[in-house]
Image 1 (cartoon, rainbow, N blue to C red):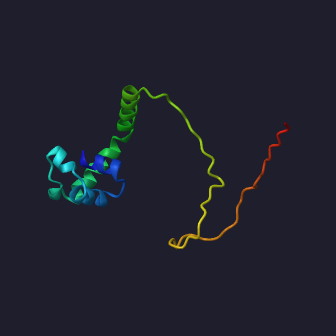
Image 2 (cartoon, one colour):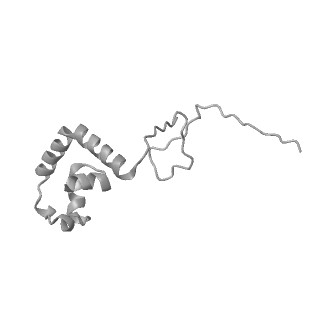
Image 3 (spheres, rainbow, N blue to C red):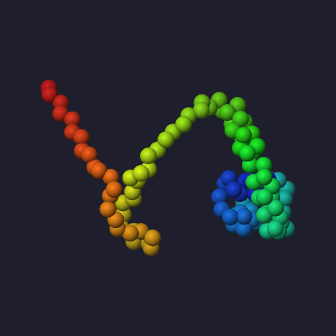
Length: 113
């Protein structure tokens, strides 16, 4: 249970999830578990078990949230083809100058009164 909570609240690797459970989370107190006694290998085994049942878990969680919250199913599509960020990139060594691939259209609307 702790690994599921860690992955949902603070997505990260299994090793980082265990560290989060041991040092930053109150999950142990909520469930009466001492995560300082949990080994990294047991976290890996739990991750393998979750992956094995991933499809069932996803369907169960989907049905449950639809039932509890009465959500309508919606598909939202985003075209990220020409997404870009603005800024200097001063603190990011991966940032680089480039050129826009998109064609910029400017549409003006004229109202006659």
